[in-house]
Length: 108
Image (cartoon, rainbow, N blue to C red; front, side):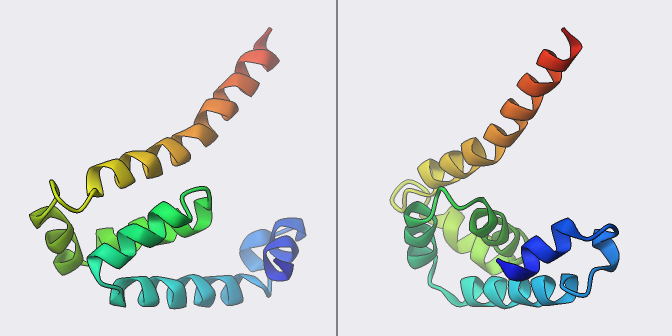
């Protein structure tokens, strides 16, 4: 939380000294998520479906790992991947919904 706040409060976030720490933490988490069995990964996504950061990192891990994508797709009817991915997309799109509402209120 410290490094995230430090980066966001920095006048130039792209040059913040905390940015490399955040990138390494995200990379480590992505590496751990790739090592999980597909069923366990889906369980974790369901368990932490309100954590946008974790959802984004997990979806990036799935996107970048062809074997994991294939394993999730093979048993899609049995492993609940569709419901989990829809819940993830709803979470991610919710941010745009509130952003669009704020833009509409500003234009009035």
